[in-house]
Image (cartoon, rainbow, N blue to C red; front, top):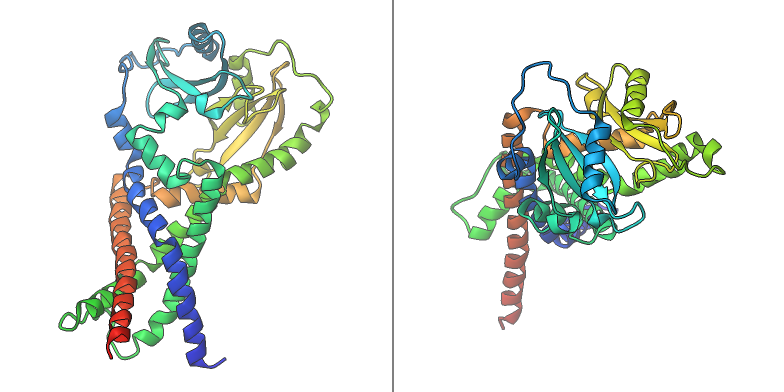
Length: 376
C-alpha cells in the first residue's frame, strides 16, 4: 500500500469513527463535568439532618442496631447493603423489597453512627435517577437503559479511541509544512478551526487516551463483576452449592470483626447482606481496601459464613477487577483532591471544543463540496 493510500485509509477511519461517536462523546463530556465534582455537589445538595458533634472517642452504635432500626421502618423489606462513610460519622443502609426484585426499587437510609438517629430517608434509585446528579450519572453511564446502554457507550468510547489514534497518524503529514501550534487566523474560518482542532487534539492526546480507555473499562464493570462471581466466587463457595441458606444468620457486627481480623491492614468500606445481588445466600460479602496510595484503590472482598461468622475466604481480585478498580479514579480524577479535579474539568472543556470543532469541520466541508457540485 502506498503512503497516499495508507493516509486515505487512516482518514476514512478518523472521519467515520469521529462522526459516529461525537454526539455521544459530547453528552459524556458535558455530564462528566459535574460528576468530576460529585462529592462537593452531593455534599452541597445533601438533604436531611446533620450528624451530631460528639466528644472524641465516643463509641459508635452497633451495626445490628442500625439494621434493626431500618427493618423496623420497612418491615416488608430486606437489607441489601451497609456502607460506612469514611469522611463523616454516618452509615448508609440500603433496603429493597426483595433480593430478587427490581434493583431500581432499592433505597437507602443515612444514620448517625454515634447516636443511631435517622438523618435522611432517601427515595428509590428509580426516583433518584431524575435528580440533577442522578440524571448526570445516568446519561454519562448508560443513557437510562441499564446494561445495554453501558455496552453501547463503551463501544462509543472505543470508537473515540480509534479516532484519537487515527488523528495522531494524520497529524504528522499534516504538520510537515507548518510549525507546531500554528493557527492560520488570516485564512478562512474553516482553516482556522482545522488548525485549532488539530492543535488541541494533539495537546490533549495523553489525557483523552487515558480518559477514553478507562471509560471503556468502566462501562464493562457489570460484565466483569458477573464474570468474577461466576468463576472465582463460585469456586470459593463450591462447598455450599448443595446446602440450603441458613434460616438464622450471625450478627453483622460479629461478621465484621471476623473480616477485620482476617485483613488487619485493611479498612472495611461496606458489606453486602447474605442473599443480596453482590453477596451469596450463605455469606456476608465484606468489602475492604488498604491504607497505602496504591492499595487504597484496590477493593479486597472477604467472604464470611453467614451462619458461623467465620471467614471462608479472602477473595483476592483477579487482574481484570484490579484494572477496573484503578481505572475509576483515573477516569474522574478524584485521587488528587480539588486541584486535580479543576485540571480534569479544564481538560474536559477543551475536549468539548475538539469534539464540537470536528463536527463543525465536517459540516463545513459538506457544505463546501455541495456548493462546488452545484456550480456549472
